[in-house]
Amino acid sequence: MNRSVRICGPAPHPSLRFDPDALGLAEFPRGFYRGDTVRIARRLLGAWLAHRHDGCWYGARIVETEAYLGRGDAAAHSRGGRRTPRVEPMYMDGGHLYVFLVYGMHHCTNVVTRPEGIAEAVLLRAAEGPAGAPARLLAGPANLSRGLGITALASGTDLLAAGDLRLFDNGAACAGIGRSRRIGVDYAGEAAGWPLRFFARGSAALSGPARLNRTGQTTP
DNA sequence: CACATGATCGCCT
DNA sequence: GGCGATCATGTGG
Image 1: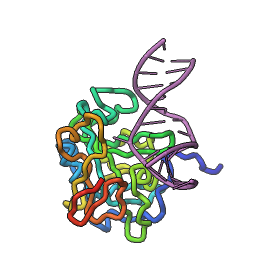
Image 2: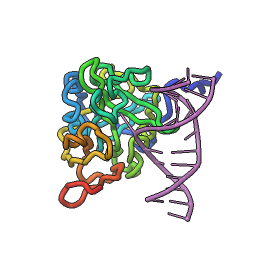
Image 3: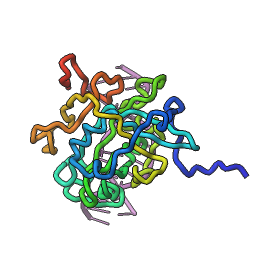
Image 4: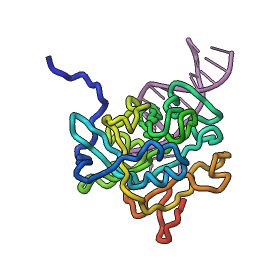
């Protein structure tokens, strides 16, 4: 009787092994996640996203994020108040995960923000693993999700439930401001002129197409 | 029930 | 820069 049944999703990449306790990391409190989505998108830069698999912790520091602003954001799955089974986690209290499948083969991981009933979230676009991990392993939202072994099975998970998925504060990160790549539609932020996409300076794992130039601004 | 599409990626030219 | 992979989901008949 072997135990080949998979009940916890794919394994994270071996190079992402780390020890959260040794680093003395603290989790964000619930109130943090209930705050302003754009502010949270910036504040999450540098944070460690951690996944416990077979008793071992794997983790990476977030280096690129993107805010999705709910009802009024034409790019958000919750646009116009849409509420379907897939999007339901977006309506949960801040601090839950919203993970979905795109293009029939890739997963995207979001951190839900704002209080219960307000469907906003921050997409995790790129991260960097511990020293020694391949530089571009987690470049792009789908690569990030795959590298850490996160699939739609984790959608609706509470990051503050002391479970296998957690998010640790790592202090204020030095952030650059990216222009949204959502062009040609009346998306939130793009039209109003405020940025929705953020990344840590000097990161080698950006998802593109935005890149830093030497002044710290982005180039399309 | 039928069908069009997507918060992407990697390989091709 | 272009394109195909591949399927759950959303929308419409």
